Amino acid sequence: MTAIALLSVAPVIEGSMSGEVAKAVAALDEFDVSYETNPMGTVIEADDAETLFAAAAAAHDAVDGDRVSTVLKIDDKRTEETTADRKVEAVEEHLGREAKRER
Image 1: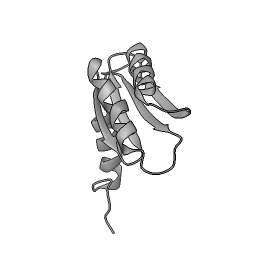
Image 2 (image 1 turned 45 degrees about the vertical axis):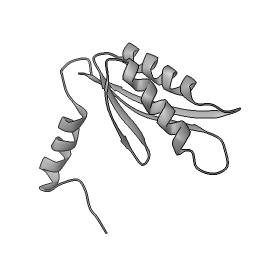
Image 3 (image 1 turned 180 degrees about the horizontal axis):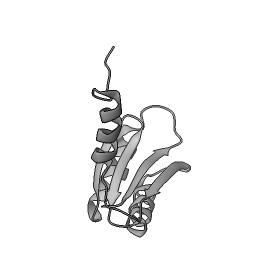
């Protein structure tokens, strides 16, 4: 997989957005992508950017509401294969530890 994205989809509403965010995440299951949701969004991996764009559009469309906010950031590395995990591992190699800290 060479295309990695950070996707954030949320309705502009009062109160909890978790139910609507869950609909956006569930929409990704219809595509040939891997993903991991975190508190700030969902990291998605696919073989190409076109698949990421299609998955992001479906996630956006899955959210109900008068107003939906979607942010999509794509890293489309075309010269070599990589993964999101490998990108984190590279940072950890420089740190000499996990790139995670708990208070």
